[in-house]
Image 1 (cartoon, rainbow, N blue to C red):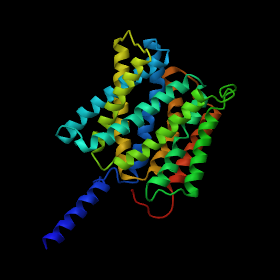
Image 2: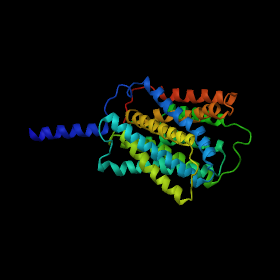
Image 3: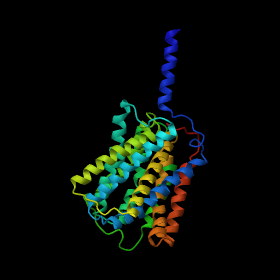
Image 4: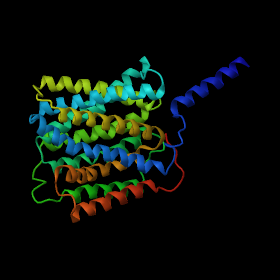
Length: 328
């Protein structure tokens, strides 16, 4: 009898590790699109904010850009830690056995991704970077196919991804925007950034059972941000002239990262990677719209409207996959 009881307890502990606690909001299929699109809208707002930050702080070199990103993510980690501690009514700290996995997640999702992105962006056009970076949904679905159960590639996923990706391409069909040629330190680095982004969605799903979403988010941002700051310093990055408006902007960017990453992590804990990653195609669409509102850039034209339609169709196709599927 004691042996039987021990086996039952072990089975229950294992089930708790592989399946996150039920949450009526996160488990609601109706709420998922709104939460995912809210995250993408926040990330989309980062594009004009980054441009404003560069202008206000006179940031032009890659080292300073990486340093700026490090400040943003490290501050985001602090905000997430404080918010998580208040909401959970305890210190939002991971167990020691979880630290190596969360540290690795921070290096992959924050450090590697953004180092490759900023270096690559400085050697290619913004349009090319936007298109290549949008391929992260493809990589997330492909990697999930091999590493996660119930995440097999289907025709609907492929069609949805291609349609959504087409939307990103259409949005960037501006004469001369795509330039010509391919360089490893330009387009190649942005591609590596996309692979890292896609892989990070899968690894985040894999470690999601270790801690709460706020704990994972807080410490991956702290770890990743700290390494970005170190790399920025090594590359000679310097940021001077912080004004009140620049500080407020940095706090907003940190807050949007804290909120978006926390919600995104929670969504990946409760749902299939492919069904969440596909929403990433809407980030550049939000970026264009919000850049138009905040920076006065052109946002309403035939290409952008067509892009919005294609991205929406891609999301709908992937998320209307028939048959019952449960999160891994």
